[in-house]
Image 1 (cartoon, rainbow, N blue to C red):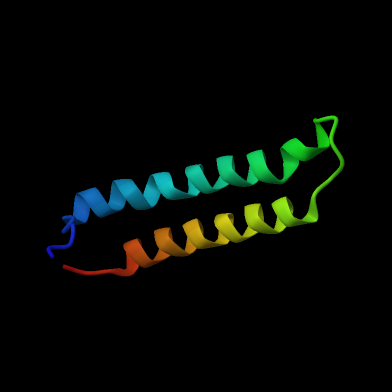
Image 2 (image 1 turned 60 degrees about the vertical axis):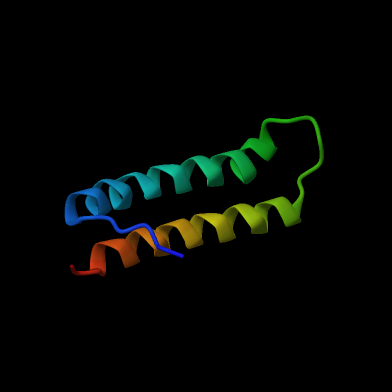
Length: 67
């Protein structure tokens, strides 16, 4: 199997957009719960924070990688 190989510019764009996606995920899974009618779910909040941390870590890893 071949892995996806990104050049430096492609990695930079992806690393720039991953934190945006992380913020949307956190907003949807954590902060949106306060706007809805359902009770606050700690499980969804933990998943949202975990997904945010994972995506931020991926962005940092992409920026640190060299060709």
